Length: 160
Image 1 (cartoon, rainbow, N blue to C red):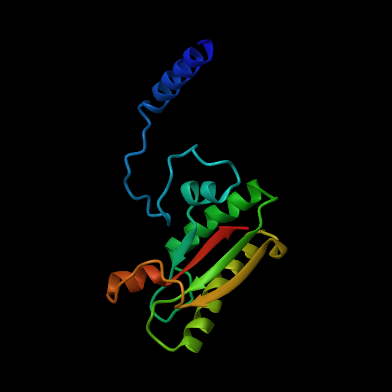
Image 2 (cartoon, rainbow, N blue to C red; image 1 turned 120 degrees about the vertical axis):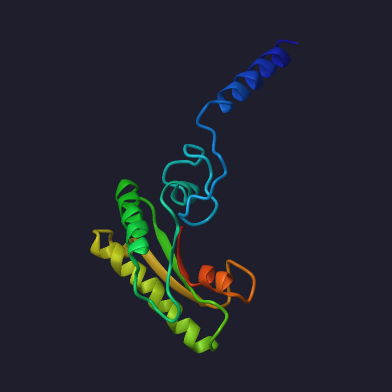
């Protein structure tokens, strides 16, 4: 009986804590994948990186040069990596589905390397970063239109 009462009180307390004024509105953060509410992710985890820093940068058509938006995201990633020195990451370069497989693999590699080189220039040890190119094989957005293609031209950083 006491266990049920304690469990019920714990559930009420948990629900009360979740109903605070700082609830996530569900609005897109523009920092990559769908963000979880701040504080919900374990510090130094992939979920923390996605929610609080941003896990991807985007590229122009047939380009591997970083934009100012990409620089800002990578600056946050570099600071996050300095805060969590045990974290190892992989950067995956991706392309839209146009072009040959060979071209897109090479372009994805240049994109991943551009992001890695930026992080290294910001003081992150190169031994903590691996890169891979998926070319056009792992689209994040489905469709054959400008919006889907733009979403698929990216480099995604994930915690290993």
